[in-house]
Length: 358
View 1 (spheres, one colour):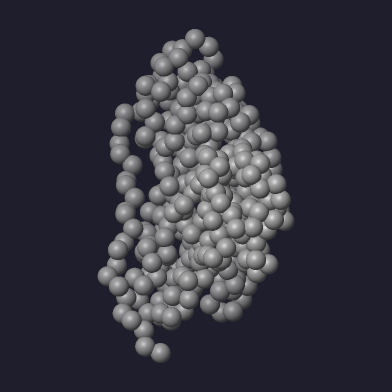
View 2 (cartoon, rainbow, N blue to C red):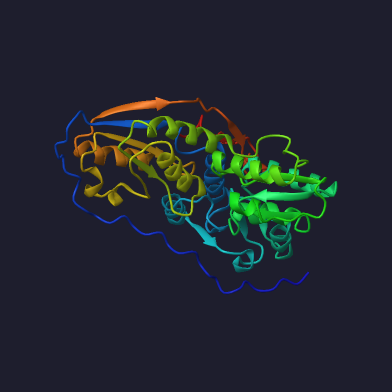
């Protein structure tokens, strides 16, 4: 089989290095300064599994290991893995024939899998198992000739991967307003699925409006919204009602992080901002603020939250109260290619999940 040479690499933008700025100042306010720290927050089992998968691939096969798209949507994680030898590319045709390539946690379509195979790439699938579940649902409903209304953001990698499982049967519904405009061929054979990282409330509103138009709309066999997305939204709802300011740690392309800002504002926070790093926090946000809520998206390592808390401490927010709404102990096995070491023995880090890395 002849394999076309790799296309000229179009490397993903290199994440910025945090800028240096003066520490936050401890400016007096009326009342006791405190931090409400949402829990659960940060890494979920699927993200942990994906990040470990890249690290283990580098250990097992050596650098470079290629990764299609960002392994997870966090610029700090991507930067750290680049430093260890990972090369992030947009598409598999940028990967040299025969090289190792990791598919991101957001999943890929069958077309991408086939393209990697055609190039003779050694593919390692780090798709979150909860996303894989949605893929399987799409395949099953398409096989039964259902029209699938996929609630999600068009252009998001997860949505592209799910839609690619059954392109002739999927219609993407971007928002509740989109639900009022969707047309279907047979209202008696319609089912909804969703992107796993959406706002729970917005998704349910979209479903409500779809069902008002299509009363026979079927539900997926189980909730598609990721447990971690739901848990983080529930926690920030509880924090937001008492917060003058909420700080969400997470990247701009992280759907679940962006949703946390929206949920915080909807549930009572007087102000809410998303930051990648503590150095992005602005002094002006703290005028008259006594209570600061802090959380992080599901692809955010805890070290970034610790840096935010340290910065807040310099501003006098020393009293940190954890607001816990759920316990998480889900663990996923690593991709099969990485469950053994080079000698064929079971690797000690064959699992990824909150139990292993908080």
